[in-house]
Image (cartoon, rainbow, N blue to C red; front, side, top):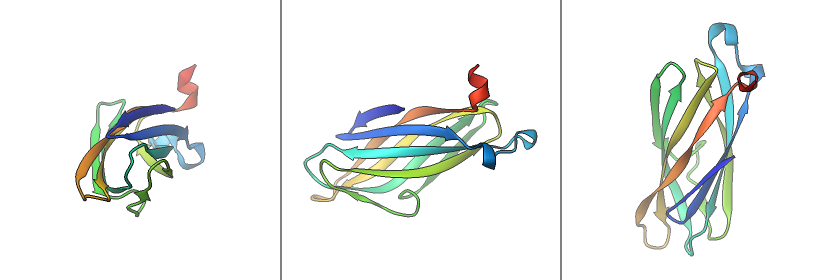
Length: 128
């Protein structure tokens, strides 16, 4: 697991290779990731947008940007966390992702960015 604190928010990421949804002979590798977002601020925050940078072992780069996460824009109260699971497909056996969340201070409506730490996705047999 990797974690990063920015803007008073801790973002932690765990990754999981999904062999049942992968097809290595067709260069299709599926990974799931679990993200925990912990609000360490004294005010509630709302996650408005996400922006991802996705890299694979060939040097290919994709960017994904959009509203919320998994179809919602969660409100996260002080001292609580929000967790979700999503996925990413790669054309190689390894890659990495990092990004940012655009957050809103729910009290004064000011916007701020929170960093999502870089994390690796790797097929387990590549670790040997």
